[in-house]
Length: 86
Image (cartoon, rainbow, N blue to C red; front, side):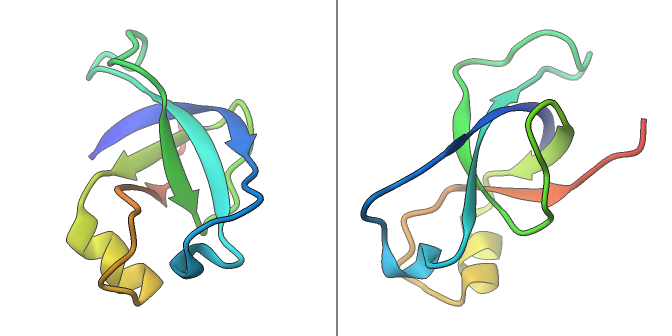
């Protein structure tokens, strides 16, 4: 798990069936200090309703994401799992 900043959304004209109705966010992960970017932005599935400019908690736990999406073949790696109160 790590925190990140939502920098935008993604729209797809075609996507995997497991993503039907799911919101896709572009999230810039941060190091533990919460300020330093940690690599390139990632695409994360969001079921919590986060928006641009919000800090989120993301995970790359594929097993968790497969359970949430109820699809063992989903290509999703990152998902939003929390909206911290700062």
